[in-house]
Structures are given as C-alpha cells and as structure tokens.
Image 1 (tube, rainbow, N blue to C red):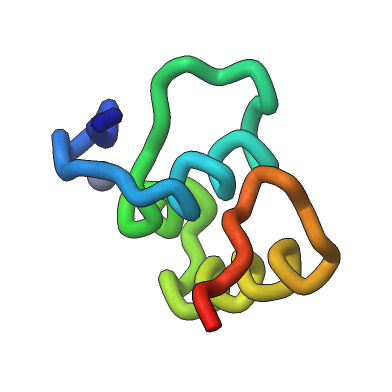
Image 2 (cartoon, rainbow, N blue to C red):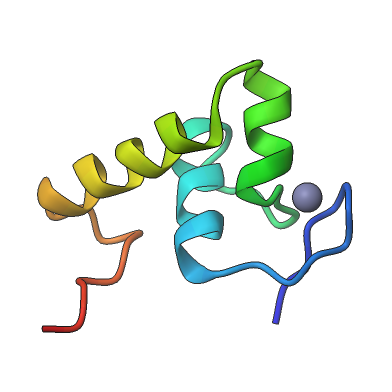
Length: 67
Ligand SMILES: [Zn+2]
C-alpha cells in the first residue's frame, strides 16, 4: 500500500485519488488528506467534502461507496 510522502502514513484509495485530482494525475507519490490540507492551508473536512463531490460526479479515481 502506498504511504504519504510527507508523514509516512498508509494511504486510502480516496487519498490517492484526491492527490491525483488536485495536484497531478500522473503522480507516483502522494500526500495523505492531513498533509494535503496543510499544503492547501485548508480544513481536512473541506477535502473530505471534495472527495464526496468527486465521487458523486462519478470520478473513476474514487471507488463508489459500498452500499
Ligand atoms: Zn501525510
């Protein structure tokens, strides 16, 4: 499993998707949501909302929620 390039925490698929969507689609190293929030100087909860938005748009980078 991929790890955050900044803090070394294991990443979820959503975090990898968010990094690709917001920073670089071809990225091979990723930031976790906490470090990404630090990078953008925004709240983690804002990024969580973004993930939900992208998921609702049917973005392939985000796995559909299990029913
Ligand atoms: Zn991190």
